[in-house]
Image (cartoon, rainbow, N blue to C red):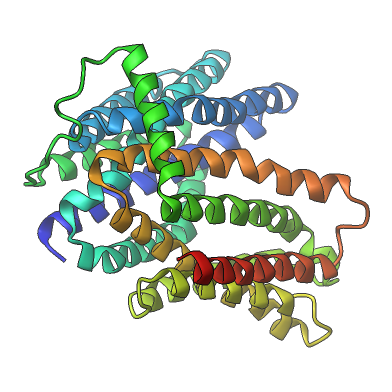
Length: 390
């Protein structure tokens, strides 16, 4: 990989550290405040969801209008200033209001920076290196996902929420400097388009939707990702009950640890897997087969190893999914396609949770097999569709 690619990965890694510190610190602090904190925690988490649903489409359209590197610089700078500013607040109730306000601004920032980040990758990395780049990024992010909460806990325990916010601000500054240091000749997408107004942005969003419906392969990828997220939501709902389901304390923690290990292994293996639609769907099918292991009447440690293989194949699927999108979608539409992916993921996930909540007797080991079977059948159906219409 070239120097710019390394800087971009490093920028995302420090950004991830900051996000984990921020979310863990704020959630833990609010939860410790009793009833008042619980109310504010609900508002805090709700703002994230609502802003993402409302602004993701606009974020994608903006990412297709301006240089994506500049969007990343502006959002990093804004987030850094806000985190440093809130760190000086000491009054408890004022801090609660400030955190909700800042979280709303950070969510707005994320709606613009997330599609810009994914789209900017193609300006830094050649198509031949996309899988390697995405695999290396995934390894780094998974390691941070596992280790950063421990750092967050230590900072919150030994110092304070304010120290966590300062560290978060520093992470945004480092991310800004890494992106600023990149030497990239980035073409501005859609350069000849009409001026920026609310009407033209809406027009861009509609144009992006038409492109997705017109390009069958891109539309197919989006539908696959959306339906997979429904199954993921059902699985994530079920996992916290595994201590009870296996009648063994620590099963949930074991599954999470195995999953993290599987994800890292999957990211290392992904670069050896051909970047094709078939390979992507085979990985998805193997995800489903792996989940069935969790429900089998075999020794617990063997059954739980299914989650290791599930995360391994899911990571391979995710890496190749994003690589396929970055390969197939023209530069002028990348931002809008990625913002659509992020929005659909949010919109489809509640269906999986709702199904698990409303249906009777879903908290059983057999539910793992049903979810796995659903994923496997869906991926096999997708392969048949692809062979006939590809």
